[in-house]
Image (tube, rainbow, N blue to C red):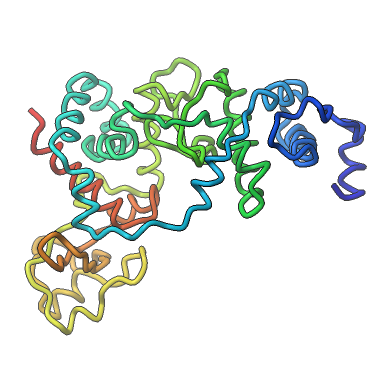
Length: 328
């Protein structure tokens, strides 16, 4: 901690240790813990004794370090990725979830203008509609990465601060929340900063609880709505034919890079009924039976704001279509 920061913190903490070395949970660097507690107290305004007492309950998890350090696995093709999530049991579970919570699901869809199958599809892919929130305590995951993982310590320390701030604000116990090894949590697997920015209290009980059905549904819908979901519009459309001249316009990033009019002018078949000015990402995906050409429309781009992957966004779209078709 530099001299000037110490001067600022002295007014609050006197730059005295806020946790004795012997109180630091095993596996965490004492200096990192001390620095985090001082900065968190200053930046969040949370009671320093509460911060220290909470962090003392964290457990260092070397398996989390191993998981996040592991080289990326082989990239799945679209066909392989789709097969993971478009299984009958996941579709049936989604329809059962809809039947059990239909009034809330429909109210969320109406309030935010986001089609209910897309909200449920995200929950289905993320946590199997709440059946599996994750195997790690969020406190352990964020403390391990935020205090003892130098490659991304700054990011995860920030997420740990936000997590503790949100738990304190919502009156939730930060020691019993379960999530992913990267600290994503709740039905929709929000990271703490997304929790802070997009979670809503849809059931009106005075807290934003990502583990409560109504708040989770509302929060996912709000996330999509804030990122400019277009009510009633498609997200993607399979294309029947793409001439060679049009293939040069294939997408190289997530942003739609061409328009319906430009593709139609080059002879692309399958865009009937869409406005010529509609932005499009022309996607070439490797399906089970070879190349598939798909028009990624603005709502698909919105889904990539939730998870920056076309594989993910297309899986959400296809699962949503399956749920819509199977609904009574």
